[in-house]
Image (cartoon, rainbow, N blue to C red; front, side):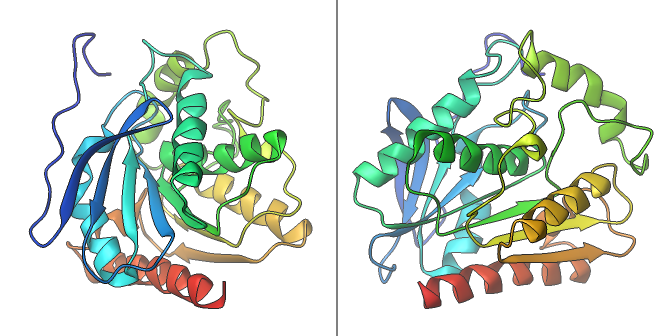
Length: 264
């Protein structure tokens, strides 16, 4: 967990991009842009870290990689972390940031993230549906958390996430109902979801959850794309610069995003 006095750093802007710190809906985050971007279209990235680690301000290089391939403007939300901010602070902040993008005139917003960020992506859609707000144009989820209770008897216990998962998730949920769809999206309404890309590795503890999400989306009649990386670890697509399987996985995400945007 981050120390109590932790403060997010100022965003680092990759070469060839403009932007910096922004505040949307009263919530801080980072924006990246450059010439030639699609009009009124953006990528919103929600970082992972077990709800207790990370910062939306450190995603510059990753966002730049996505934006170079999709010609989108990019945003990363710097939501508050547990245990200092328990549910529903983080999801409320993400909803507020998303509303800020709508207010700024974006009409096609792609939302995605990894691990807890992927779970929060699904929870964002659940929260938006509850409020009757416009949904994202598409979502992508790398190794999503589907159920905050995390039944270790039914998943593949093969990565370090298992060792620390209980403490992190307890820190985030507090006294809230773990079956709230804004916490555990698997318990939500999956009807009329935006096109979704779900990805997981066979050697990770969240593989079963990703399969459950895919099953829910398919049964509800949604457009869903799923890849299951044989022998791959947790959030392996995020290692796109390290080994070819991860690069291929990231390319699949970016191809999905481009295909959805070309049809919308």
